[in-house]
Amino acid sequence: MNRLAQIITKIIDFFYIPFKRFVPEQMFRYAACGGGNLVLDWVLYFLIYNFVIGHELVNLQFTIYNLQFAQAITPHIATLCIVFPITLLTGFWLQKYVTFTGSTLHGARQLVRYISIVAINLAINYFGLKLCVEGWGWYPTPSKMVITTMTVVISYFGNKYYSFRVKSFKKK
Image 1 (spheres, rainbow, N blue to C red):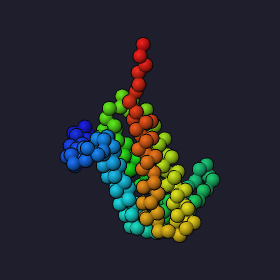
Image 2: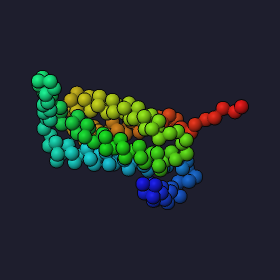
Image 3: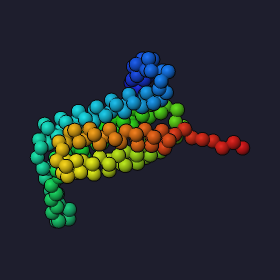
Image 4: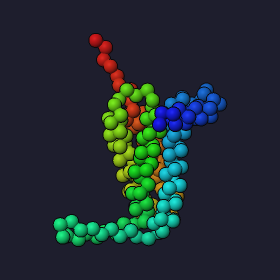
């Protein structure tokens, strides 16, 4: 996996050359990795919503201790639930091994912190989709794109200063 991270980093750094004077390297890598993961998110969302879920309600039925439960989930929320874990893992891997490589925090701590930032974004996505699709009648895929774009700023600063921050050591 480190070899793949090195290849991705070299490709991103090649495209960074003309932007060196204008954008810090870490921010450029974040934008490239986050942008790639964002496009993956949008493509998966579109494909799953249109060709797997098929615009239909998803009916979940299960039994626990002879109690039967049934729940219908709207197609745009069901799609979000499928796509979310995929892009969570790809995003964490890219940020850890390509963007914020200088972090000295333990990987498990980074993951927990990363998940907390992503959880905030998931809540924004969930309520934003509810508002845009069910409240305002917008199409699900463009709604997802607008909402996700808004969460980029939260993600960058949350990951830079919380999830992957470099451990500071107090001077003696």
